[in-house]
Length: 355
Image (cartoon, rainbow, N blue to C red; front, side, top):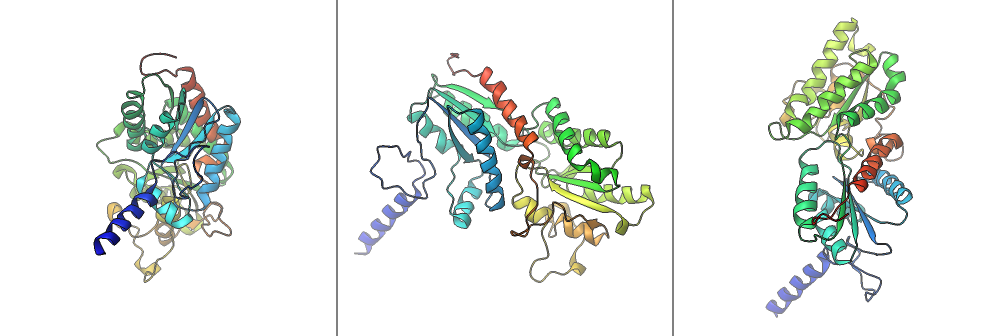
């Protein structure tokens, strides 16, 4: 009896995972709601949107905007959304009941469905670890080579080229211009990659910061990261100190605007950047000088502890009044990704060279 129960439990686990099954119009109707890979082939072309992902509720509306953009731009295309973070895929289902899958689960199902063309659009910001793994491993190695006759277009990440950096800087500068002109400061939080492995990708943050400061004509807009040592909170901290000293102003007379330099306002934005005190913590505990790699407190708390004011416009994380803006909430920035796909489609080809 015990063995039978164990076998039944194992079968239940297999059935509940359901991540590789591609449901079609002729299935028996017994669909597992947790199964995210549901292929509904209506056209000869599939477009897979690939984001790092988020388990927070607010970014789901941003993903809806992105999907709507691609449906409008590619009306004769079947559009699917995937996440490249396996951890987030699990937590988003547990928290929100929404099922997503990794690209390496979507792509074999798309191939099996018989699509002749497949477009893959990265929604990552820099050409770093997640982006390169997607394009080089998931798309090229594991999809194009085993399916050499399928024509593939690979849409680049947001900051792929120097021109992209300039265009994003102009959009963000225009958005924050009024606040910058009023003497306020803007600090943007990107993600970043481990220091030594992705120098080119991380360098995009330096380029963007320099371009933004060139547009503002003032050193009052900064770019920091969660994970790149050269530009973590300590970079923001020292720049704020230098700005106050240069302007001969007390921190209490300077307003700081915080915003994610990420596609959506998810976990890093709502916790690492804008998180409040947790149980047992007090403002007396907050240390702006804490080690970047062992940080306990958010950017917001540390900047407040330094005496600066935080602008509430774009920094409220309460669900009822949520107003944090991710990059993909800017329609002009979403257009850059769309332009990348447009260019990729022009160059689309199969592994055997057919177009």
